[in-house]
Image (cartoon, rainbow, N blue to C red; front, side):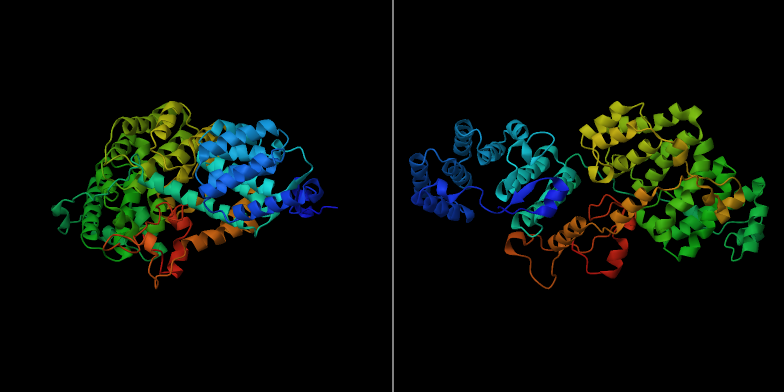
Length: 565
């Protein structure tokens, strides 16, 4: 009685064994010795000399009724890079021995090595299952591993699908987690993921805008004259009573008070941009922006937007993770009355990518709040896509921005310009590690959505700008237990397979700074800058697809000796 992995069978209904399936009585003693000898040679995985190949060819001819020798010779051809010979012999073997399962997988492997992927796909079958190539109830592990190894290779090479590759690799892992083939393919999948992301980041179509700060008017440096200095002093309030007094005095704005606020905004911005101060020094500018945007003061829009025309370092220094929380309601109120001002900002060159993502989010929210104007707001997205497709503008074209825009398009179900979305993907202007593939995005757009679910609350009065009580009005549906479990699994995986892949990832990424790099990877550059700064809202360098602040930021704080970039 041949034993098999029963736990694996209970889950997948596949009986896999590592015991021989063919009785030794079927072969002569000399034939068995030949098989054992060649099997031992092939296990070494080394290049076959011409002499050894000729000897194996002789044995194949002597034992012409034994398909094992054909299979061994195919493997020897592949090890010696004789791919055409391997493919020819594989065709012959499948024709002569149609029921020989190893011949089928060898044929598929030889076809793969010759880039004949149509044959590979046909032999592997759809949906993928090892039973596509065998009718046997009991399968030898060599056939099992060979089949799913080829499934993984096909997924990575032809489908560029890490997801499918992981699915087939999980089959290997669940059968034998410690098998060398299982471990080798875990590394191959991870390395392919690195390579894919590297190719995206360094492809000719990949674009990243160089952010440049707007030069401010030197006149803003001068201390302004204020009509209401007592109100200006309240901008930097310390107590709730002072805050309430500021709100009360700002419910109605006289022309003089508007002028005071605008002058104070300009002066504060100039000082903070010229020489970085403490975080609190920018607070008056934020409070002024709250007041002036709520009242939709047109003369204040450009000075408010000048806060956003500074470089990324300015944004990160003064607001960090709180930037969106501060500026989303400000931009919403500005764009509600003056959408053309925000759209114009989107086409300004060398502006911060993250700022533009917030503006696009605002426009997607306008679609949800004001559906009667959907066509007008969707036009903002389609205009931007059209410009990026037709203009190679280094100051505008940004792959990360276009990729982050996809989530806004999906959340507001914008399907009126599918052709432009497809063109953006086809031109290679999307980082699929951020938003997924074109197929993923189009599939999400087809799903039925409760658009009210995606609406973000906004302040309804000036008080709510300051106390942020409007955030309590989220109309989120209760999250299902299944979704909560999936999210928890993503953040803190408990699945042993995911933990194993994370462990392999850590080992691949590990590098001892006290040791020299191996000669084959020793950099040629005289100096490589270490610890390149990653912004909180940039894609995480670990390629998870999340923003840095949502992923590895806290880890790097505790591990200051991060890998050199």
